[in-house]
Length: 150
Image (cartoon, rainbow, N blue to C red; front, side):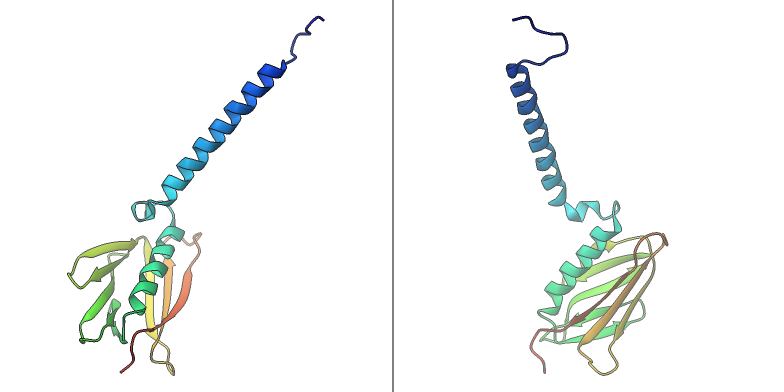
């Protein structure tokens, strides 16, 4: 049987499928690896910064008893009347400071950040983050304290 020009043999098709599976697996592993390094990619995508805000606030509000609003941020106060975490907007970037005063960049390139207590529910914090780039989505959320209430 003569082989026509441009046709692939069964071996060629199997090799091509194998190479495709290997490349797809490599891309999936790369994507997984990049998603595990979310803290290092704050500059690349604003939604990653929003995700860090949610993760950190969720963790901190589990331990806090009350919120304390400051001029450029807020603090979550714990059982011993000491801050569990302090969030501050400094030079268009939101930082989180823990008990050891070690600062962590949460999100940058913010035009404005607003932190307010709900007028009726004093344990509910309203958070608004507006990015410098108006084409990016703004961020609105609220968090309630879930620590022991005094």
